[in-house]
Image (cartoon, rainbow, N blue to C red; front, top):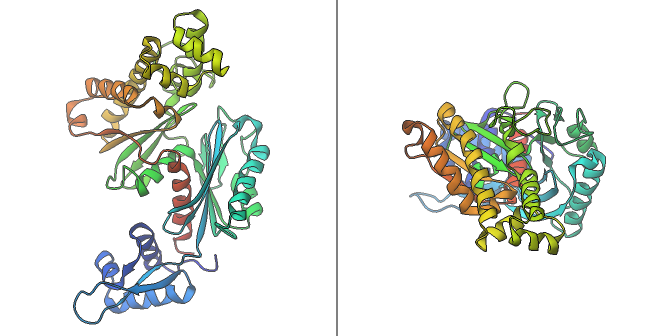
Length: 393
């Protein structure tokens, strides 16, 4: 990227063009508190830097028609979303439209070097396909707490070998562009805020139910990360005193009872104990069970699979109910790999939240599935790096 905005006015204009697409000077003037002459100066400077380009004639508002301006089509961002069991890589334009998207299975426990080799190989494939020659910036999500200013994972429970690894620095050198790093759930929340179900909401919770469970907290349109980057680590809220041991070292955590890993374990136990012939047949056919197999068994009417989903949803709802009473959000979004369990899961979560939280907090509170699916994380990653680049140098 050859330039950054020189001041806060230019940064605001770039973000407006990102979020609203091509706009006339008059439309931009409606959204920013600048005189027409000052606005013209700032737009002209952005045109000179090459960050924005002219884009045809705007619709007439009386008088001489002006040209639309838009973000330069040559600006391209790389989004990398690392989960516990897969990696997603996408290229977006500056308006965060996904131009190419690849995903493949991967085990985060292989460590940062092996995982980033795979992510960079996928980025190379996208380049080879002609989607991009290079990248102006990259956003990266990892499934654990991140010390945000440095872009470094901190003591992530499911990521051995990642503690303190300089993700931002290492990837910036490899890619030759600026890099920003955040927790994967925060990026999914940003993705849904930009292009999904949370577009019109300023205060919301995004709950990811994947291998583990985490929560992105958006306050006044901004992600809240907490003092050390561990805000939203709800998978380790206790739901059962002295309950099952959890990977974090404590007992009775939500994640010990629900999420992809514990759901797979409980489903396989039911299959082996003979309580569910349906799950036993699927285990014999697939060799292992996960959320997709449990969802299929539930769709076939298997009572054990349905009970696993409902019980897990109720426990998750128990935790979300506490968050709703405390935070009073305008929306709760449920996303992540386990949302393939669909409306059985959603109904169990809703029932628990509406039963347990105060009516004032739940009155008119939508609890919905995310709209973007696997694209949420990579879209949020592109949003993260664009927020960085579209801020004054």
